[in-house]
Image (tube, rainbow, N blue to C red; front, side, top):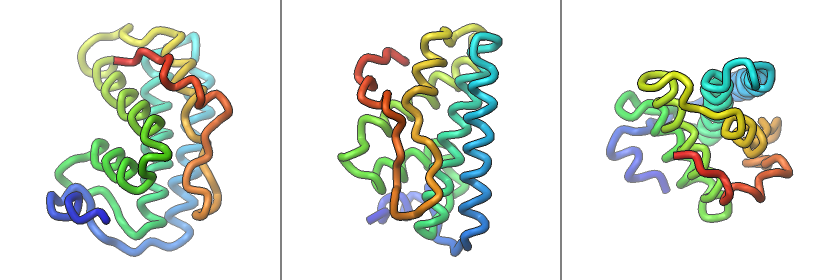
Length: 153
């Protein structure tokens, strides 16, 4: 598992203690709260901060599993890791969060106002909530069953 990501240097092995995992989860929880506060005021940034919440939660899982992103793929490496780590059971969720990454890039770098309030709200509705335990790898919010209806592109 993870051989291809390691070979391409998208991830690397590293030992982390519980403090690093908890710190990443705390950043994720903070960012979810901030994204909620931004809804309706600045939906581009609400989505961007929601993306960061997902990124931090993904990094927490990577840390718990003994990995960190490599220097070659940035944010994309975290979502590639999540896709492999969480497997088919959470493939739809990981794909959706990866689409948030792409939409965030557009909103931040290419087109202000690219995110609608509906997209920002839906992103927050389906993002996993940070989990405090390693055994519970993904804690989707109840609205996660609506993933297929979300048109983020």
